[in-house]
Image 1 (cartoon, rainbow, N blue to C red):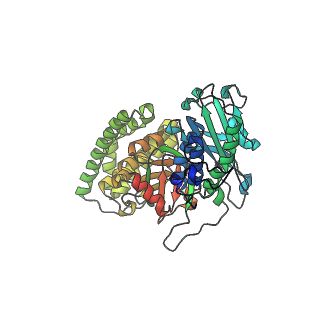
Image 2: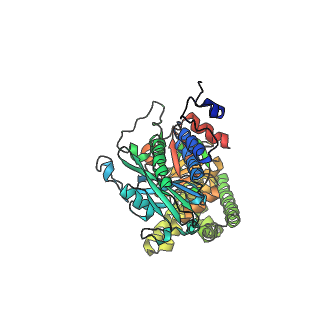
Image 3: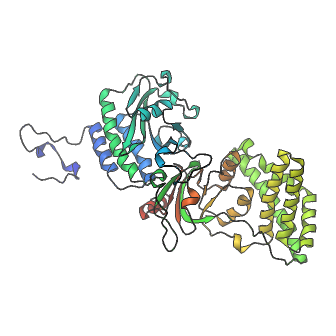
Length: 458
């Protein structure tokens, strides 16, 4: 009797072809879950889709409340060497949790281990599976307080091996008194081969680091997945646009109306900052958003406004006059050498750019609506000006980190990934990007299936 192997629901004992032969029909929950996982892992999937589903499927096979997938990624050095200077194998790497079920979503992209660090890092270093009945008692245990993993001390980890070495690791965790058996270890090692297949299809940065960048006639590189750190969850797709600021050489056109526009711009900026402070309180950002108070104080300072109006008239330029106020603050800060004065001077520079755009928009600094904004860092300028264009998502390079960036991104309220490795090497205007703020990934020139998946989720 011939049966389509894909139609497993049609199989029953009657299809057994002869004496001593058994067709293992559906009904054994563990075997069914294994067969389904192998089918799933064999599909052509985007990395984000794979990371979404694989942990839950593996956890189901082993009846484990926690399953984590770690990917081995380049650890960005302080001064990144060029591909010509350093072979990929010699670059420092780290294990990054990119997929998980059972822990808070904030763990993705944040939990990181060096090779040999923790039980997971030890398994990868030894290229052997490790099982532990009481993880906290193990000499290599690394505790992450934000996970609450002490509830699941029974631990099993297997490295995910590729053709040229480790690609990552898969870990399972259970409640006390539910130890993993040898058959569990054997099965997890076997399933790690399917995980390796899915990861190898993803074109991660460390696989592409030594390859030349190729761009089409309209811009756009090949499909590339760049790892980073998620700070605002969610996923969005859009055309890339670099963060822009007003021109450094503004045009000269001052009339009485321009003076009035500058005054109005200060009032608008002050109201906007006050609204942002209320929004920060609603989001519970606390001390991380204290910098907004500094902006409110600057805008409430009548001397700042009066000096700006005076310089606008002298310079015969809105942009030139407002920018000169910022330059004066910078010069004063350098003379004092005071760290607070220097920070305040940088804040005044941000506000000067924002006031300039509010008073007289510069077309060269405008951005397309619903774009994916890329840049080094976020500032209050982006809350006051960039946000008006309703960006779809934000991707930042290595400079975009810290408490202020987290607060600014939360206030913008769109998916955001920071510390994106290779962002400015690979991304260019004309590319389309998928920003995955759940896993901490940026996919340049995603496939149609990637895009449809994001839009379908909305």
